[in-house]
Amino acid sequence: MNRWLSSWLPRTLAAQLIVTTVIAVILSNFAVAAWFTATHNRLIRAQLMDRVVDRAASAAGLLDSIAPSERQRVTNTMSAGPWRFELTTRRPGAAVMTSVEAGLAARVRADLPAASRHGLVTVRILHGSDLRAHPGRLRRLGHPRRIPARVMRITIPLNNDRRLVTTFLLHAGPPWPLAFVYGVLVAVLSAAVVAAFAIRRVARPLSQLTSAASMVAHGGEAPRLEESGPQDMRRAAQAFNAMTEQVRRMLESQRQLLSAVGHDLRTPLTAMRISTEFIDDDEVRERIEKNLDELRALTDAVLSAARGAGWEKRRRIDLAALVESVCADLEDMGLAVSCHQHAAMTVLCRPNEIRRAVRNLLENAVTYGGSAELSLSEENGMAAVRIDDHGPGISPQDLERVFEPFVRLEDSRSHETGGAGLGLTLVKTIAEGHGGSITLQNRPQGGLSAILRLPREAEAA
Image (tube, rainbow, N blue to C red):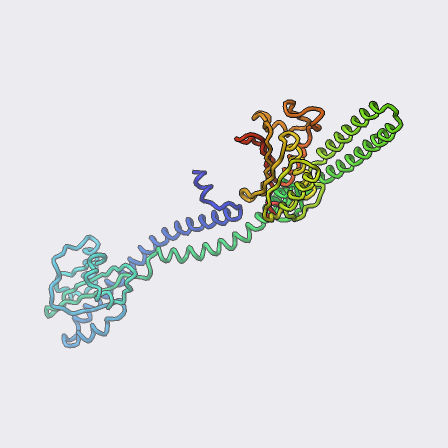
């Protein structure tokens, strides 16, 4: 039941509250209209019956008291609107009256003057199939075809072997469902307008909070929320602003610390490299310089991984042009890298971080797979940078583990050829900082595929 309601209701809170309000208004109006209509119809029907009985009896008494030659003119004068009076010599049919009709007939007879009680009074209430054969009679009574009809016909004997047939249209306007629809439409429109203005005070701050949280999740800088609306929403906005401010100060402090650490590490390394120039033994000097190079590379890798993403401002760039330029740089260095030509693909990103991530993936593919082939495509609104190599691949249990810091797979890396085990960690940090992802998968024909997915411009904003 809950799953069905979830699929039927709108997705936004504001729309759900408005729909819920509208449904409540419809149900309440339906209940009130049903109760009111039933009570009102009973009252109107009783009043109409009394009116018809009184007028039919009065007309019969009047006609009995005037000359027979004047009766037709009088009946023609009295016939107007839903009333029709006819003089006839035909006897009423032999149909048996219902208990309601018999009761009405007794009331008519009781209201007649004593001198006008000449015989059996009959009452018939006709509706449905009884009236389909007499459309002309309904038109004469002024009845519109679209509304169901009920006709009350009273036959009263007069003197001189004549009978007065009084016909009255028992219809007092549109049926209640149509009136109910009109009333509900007005009530729904009024309730929806009022609910929209009221719900806006709740939905707007909540929508702003959701957008800001989504922006932070995609690596963006959270805007300061307006602390307005109901008290609960104001508190939520205040808590979010306080949280983002604390995170911003913490990250700024981290940046300053990392910059200081980087400077302090590079200074002694530079001094040590200068000191190696005074070592006469070439073999010792080369071994020390090699260790210093490894230490500097390790320092740079650790600092890059620790900084993660978020240092650079986002810009709209052509991702195809960026990856092709990275491939061209590596080709100029003599690496076995190839790149397919691609149409322009605009993304909103931090270009230097994406360049670093693509470069790391290409260098890994060349180092451990012999060559690298880059292609660019779009997958479900995401820009996908795919890099294939022709190496031995990675065992399935290690496809996720290689993204952990300092993880080095000994069957594919060595201390002479490998790095510090932070390259893929940095790529994952950059991808997730852009709201994207990085996945590795073994190719059926051999080799490994690294797929870097990034949101397109509309999704990364």
